[in-house]
Amino acid sequence: MFLQNFSNISLSPLKTKTAVLPLIFSSFLMSQGHAFNAQPSSDSESIVTAKIEAAKANTPRLRMLVSAFPKGGDLHHHLAGAIDAETMLQWAGDENLCVDPVKLSVVSPPCETAANKKPAKNLERQDPALRESLIDAFSMRNYHFNAVSGDHSGHDHFFASFYHFAAALDKNFGRMLAYSRRDAAANNLFYIETMENPKIVSAFARGILQDAKGQTSPDTLWKVVKDRLPAAVAAAKVETSEAEAQARQILQCDIGHPDPACAVTMRYMIFAMRSAPPEIVFAQLALGFALAHNDPRWVGVNIVAPEDGAVSMQDYDLHMQFFRFLRRLYPDVKITLHAGELAPPLVPAAGLRDHIHKAVFDAGADRIGHGIDIGWENNSVETLQEMAKRPIPVEINLSSNDAILNVKGSQHPFALYRQYNVPVVISTDDAGVSRNDLTTEYMRAIQEQHVSYSDLKKLSRDSLEYSFLSGASLWQQKTGEAVKPVCAGIDFTSAPQGKCAEFLAKNNKAELESKLEAAFIHYEGKVREGGL
Image (tube, rainbow, N blue to C red; front, top):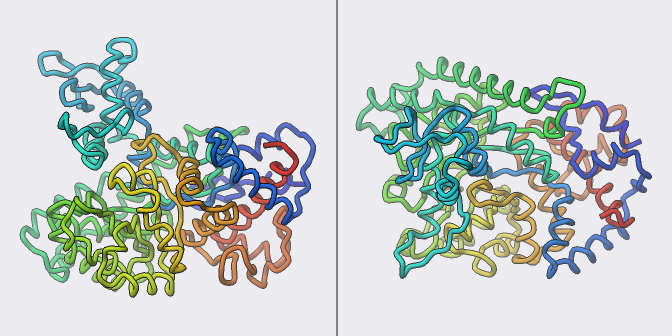
């Protein structure tokens, strides 16, 4: 029985047994209603295809179908940008923080009118108009660019939002994890790789800046950094464990009736701020590499901040050198890079010519985030061919590409990457700031990029295949085709047996992929039989 197959869920914070029970399936099972035929069926896929095609012009109906669709992973996810503005204000009030009604920002206490600080607590009753203005400042809600009135661009509004709400998240790592896992469960999502820095990262980098001021050579910077890494790694591991424990407590993962979000797996990536001085960037990256090497919960390293910024553009080649240097020291650590998140007129044409190419060939990126300017690059065919060959997937973020870069529809390189057989995955970027979720992103792929139901399954499968989860894949080559011989002939809706069970238990990636296949079968069965 399907219920029996999913009943044994381990909730270890380090290695969650990801027998994920998406909400649509868990509610069905709990109701003990009639069982669906759990056998895969081309007829079922055809029926779902037809219903999704028919719903393209009926957005509420499409939302129902896509929300219930099993999604693999969200591989481009900023933890700070994932939290909605209302929740951040609630947390600020819980911690007795203040808000500045002029700067529209969360600030530290004391909350004194003379200092232009008002309590964040109970703003909905004390000053509802201010609360609404803060929500708009924290997110893209109600944002409409108007050049005549002098409004700043969507790009500027988006990135400025983080400075408005940062103080509300400063001590809420665990709450943020719980929030994102709940959001994932609500979207029938199995896995998240999120970008977030433990607090030790800033302190560590400031210490390096003091002792390496003005240095840019990776060799010189490494000599300053290397002996300090073990203590910083240890502190980051403790901070991670504390945050995970808080998240588990919020979700009640260790009691008899845990939140369905407890079954969502999360892994983490440290990032460097590309707008910072080189000494800071190197220190942040070095700690990220060392932590990912020593703690399996931390699976990779990235670099963030507006790529079009003056310092980001000037130091881009240097940053690629940093990645290449550290990769030689830590060859097991994965790299995903924000690269090509550029479009005219943010930078001149000369600034659009090589960022993705350098991320691929110089830094050795394992994935590319955004990749918008690929059509502008000088060696675009060579880059696309290399990305298809290795392969190096692209993390596609349709809503933020629209809001930040004003790129959507046929202007977006989504179809170009697929034309060159470069894997693509759909992700959220900053769902809280954008006021959306992964379901919205899949819907945009259907409505704007004209993907089919078969394409949706490929996107979902590939989001696990190209994750940085540990272990081998379920698939021999391409997702959705032949599985590994050890699991040949597996019935995805039954508990695996023998050698296949042993293989899945040892390989997180393959285990999650097998659960996703079971979820596809049950989703298609429910749609076919009119349950959705």
